[in-house]
Image 1: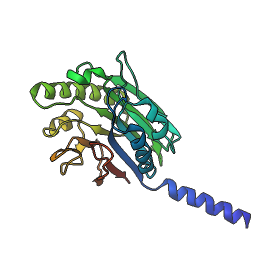
Image 2 (image 1 turned 180 degrees about the vertical axis):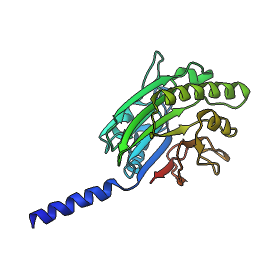
Image 3 (image 1 turned 135 degrees about the horizontal axis):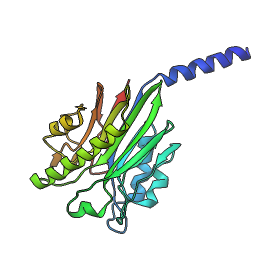
Image 4 (image 1 turned 90 degrees about the horizontal axis):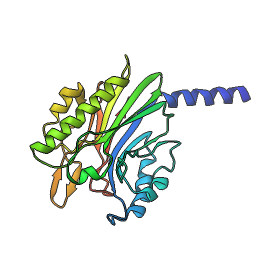
Length: 244
């Protein structure tokens, strides 16, 4: 009887490991309390509760240090926001229920305006599921409309491409996911990175009656399940992708 129970447990664990990979990206507008008051601590509790159903979570604008211990609850593997020489981190918080095999952070060479206060850049990290290696790259690109801001974002995307090429090897699945701050012309990013974009419709950012599509998932393999979750705990909606 004991052997039967052990066998059933092992079978259940094997089936569970072959399931879906549930991934979420979200700009949570968790700005430093000493700069803005956005009910950060209260919101972080509700945000963390929403995150529990996901295997991989990448958050942008996770700047407020007091919120990080709350946001990470329920996740055993964490990469905290990185900091260069600037006063504020890059705001990129990574939460995973799978072991993170390695990670690498870069900082952008170009920025403009208030974005230059933060150590903006990108973070790449790798996990393995069912013998398949996945490299996620999360970022928060330059904000602002106009050609000068477009040029900065293209420069930042080219730095991300260098990061991805440096870490890619045959058979590795790469996913760029985050706030690209680009409401149109994302096909330029696709071409530079040689990745496919899986979301073209609806909006992920809102301010009053103004809405824009700013958050994306781009990958070097086919993604079929994508959704924008209408959770109003930030000025952005979270985006979800299921990897089969």
